[in-house]
Length: 331
Ligand code: NAI
Image (spheres, rainbow, N blue to C red):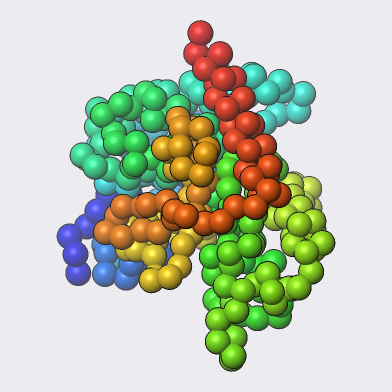
């Protein structure tokens, strides 16, 4: 076994926190040979729930779990952590203005950026899940200048997994035989789920998903809208947002980032744009990436048709607008 690493989960007393804890402590995030010490942070009004979560983790007798800290103190939570999963956020309340919501989240991410900068281990790697995920990650990057921008990412893997799920259902194949869909842009309803480059393993060899589906109307219509709207459909039915699939996607994101993507496979991650594919630099945008030795790289040179280009730009425009709104909250 490797020496233990410290993982901070912020907003740990929430829904995703409850679902993700056993996944982390059973090695689904960092592998079955990686012991973990979990730091759980939430706000004081949740401290009882946080304490219970700690008890339940102890009661699960998990061999990879080498320690649990449940705290409402940000500095203690951030102390020497190697990995950070940020679930903490202010939820949208009935009748709340977009700016008011943004302003609450900007304040949270600004404060936590400073704490991470001061207390986290050097080279700590961060995944922001809480919405607005891309813009929260951007604020974190802006207020933690000593953390390399490459170490700050946001979750679009849930959307990626949803897209794989839709193709596998449509083609009646195992989801594990489908790969290389792409989520471009924002984790919001403007995201662009793109199946143009997806590949399916079949008994006759590897085939293009687009050719197998052979229905452009579905690929450009229902496929995209189903993935874009899936989160909203779940909220409506469940009266709260997806937790289990979000927790599972967060594990996939960290797993592939740290342990690497298989050869010939890419995944979608919200990362700091360097201007690739003509997307404005300086926003956190979801791209197809491959990962090796803990470093992600944007997949280069994919052919982009006019339909895709328009969708990629629309979601980029939304992110630029969100960035401006976030900055206006800092004044
Ligand atoms: P939740 O509301 O159950 O949990 C959020 C937790 O954050 C609460 O326990 C709250 O007390 C805590 N919190 C609030 N402010 C805090 C602060 N300053 N410091 C520490 N903790 C703080 O929400 P849930 O369902 O667990 O979702 C978490 C976030 O993830 C939400 O923002 C949700 O919209 C987002 N989400 C993102 C997805 C993605 O694919 N990127 C998918 C699903 C959810």
